[in-house]
Amino acid sequence: MLTVQEVAVLLGTWKTSGERFPRRLIEERRITFVKVGRLVRIPESAVTQLIAANTVQPLAARRPARRSAA
Image (cartoon, one colour):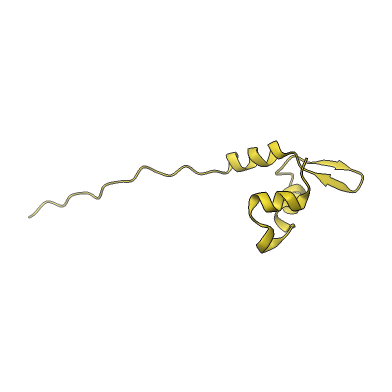
């Protein structure tokens, strides 16, 4: 179980936005979390799933079309 700050560091958003991005994910219910009293904890598996679900695979490089001499 990770704190909101630890999730921000894992996602690489700590330096730019602090805890805002992970807290927005929680507020929008886009990530699984556990609330114990006032504490919010996020399973590491939920962060891994979020990253996997939002990973975009690159397209195969296309070769430029050959122009015929006219």
